[in-house]
Image 1 (spheres, rainbow, N blue to C red):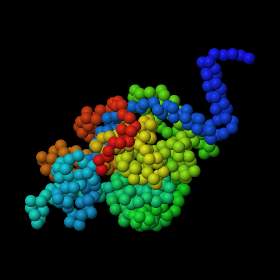
Image 2 (image 1 turned 90 degrees about the horizontal axis):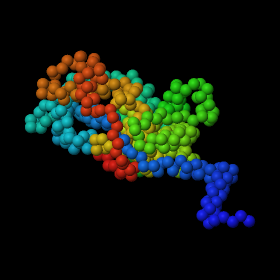
Image 3 (image 1 turned 120 degrees about the vertical axis):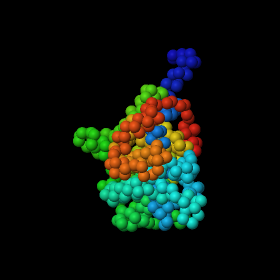
Image 4 (image 1 turned 60 degrees about the vertical axis):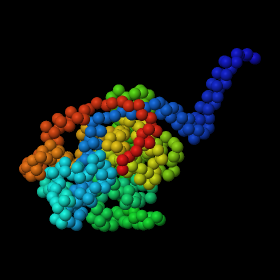
Length: 439
């Protein structure tokens, strides 16, 4: 009988235990194998990740916060029966619009959009109506909505198709109108025209919801599937359709990313997992499995792909968390996959952005609505720079025909402010989970 020392014996027993675990995992219980691989993968996740601040995307978020507020005010003036808004009526809208300054000061910044005049009955009360330039821009926006109505219907159907019950409360959709490119009062102007796609229902708590009337199989193709179908060869895509290959998410890691080698190794294992379409039923998947985590990544990727600017606020996603079958602390998904998502804390809120949607601070494939909003922002900037000259000092035709992106002076000044580099901040996932949204 072989006699060994105590320390060696302990190492020997430990090795035997590991061999037994691997044997049972590989040959006896497939579920144990999945658990073993899950623990192996999750060992990398425990590496402390650094949150990297992207200055160019933060600048886009900062710019579009004012742009969104101006568009919402424009729609509010259009809805008003009098055709104008008083300073008193908008005094409490600062938080609702996501502004860091009072609404009255904000509207006075942009005389090319909002024309100030005294109230006809109370002259001391400031009022605001749309300028001719703003009306012209709004008419162009409505023309795009009419021309792209089928695209809007498809986008709204896809949002409903990703949910468990194919139903979403209207109160959860209203904050997403601007992000999803839905027309103002879409529930009155758009939904009734398509009874084959949508219908209104009342939830058990009395809340009005929008429900998908019929499943549209032609819509059940994700943006990732479309992009891979165009990018890969026919043989590779046929292998994926037969389950012999997995679709990969585009990755764009920040420069000099901490623990990059470990994260990249983990990402390679993550990419090898089967891709689950966000339009497939996921209720049979183990909620604690890595397969479910990849499904969650796919849902968030698809939802952001449907937005006009490839981003939205975390609070808006949180209102749809249960319907989209997302985990309670789904914000950790964004920090865990920094090559796919970027989480911004700009403007006193938390915004999540799809990295592949931007290149050097610009949208890679801008939607016509996004292009029109660039014109809208150009009008805002022009009024801000020259607000002392009045609202009608510029030629409307020249203003609307020129592409705002090609205005050299404005672009140079913005690039000086925004920069292109990444800055590193050591922030725990729990800190980002607890970040408050200013809504």
